[in-house]
Image 1 (cartoon, one colour):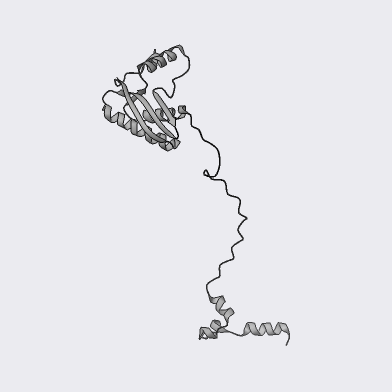
Image 2: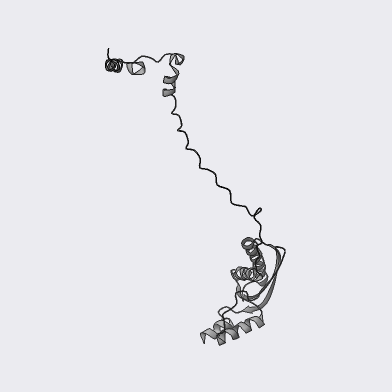
Amino acid sequence: MSEAAVVEERGEEPTGAYAGESLGDPADVPAEAAADRAEPRPEPEPSAPTPRPEAPTANVLKGRIKVADEVVEKVAALAALEIPGVADLGGDLERAFESVRDRIGVGSKRATQGVAAKIQDQQVSIDVTIVIVYGHVVMDVATEVKVNVARSVSRMLGMHVVEVNVTVDDVRLPGEDSPAEAAQAS
């Protein structure tokens, strides 16, 4: 018989499960046939790309990071102003000076007004002077300012806050504008 005829004969013969025969003992089945009926084999994974050299970590990389006192003061000032009941920052003299500067049009209000920070060895102490809106409990507002300033400076700048001193310098009546706002309105 020719090779083509042999292929045809094999194609016509029913075999195994297709012929309705029972499969019998799995030990009688050739290993290749058993592997075909087994769960599909996972595809081989493509080879992993060549690893790149890792970026140096902060512990290995040399250099210094210095944070200016003004940065700490600005973060502390913004954190203090977030607290309900804080009307303004700074003492009488600072606010009066800012009012004069605003009236004559020289510069703008300093963001760090009423805040002083001292940094030593990643430890910082902060002094904040605030003006409270009348009707708020002074001790509660001052305590909230103290906690929020310490939390914000610690979280944003990664420094250990040793102390936060809050000075309540004045009380502002609700609806009363600050001297700078009153000057702008007139």
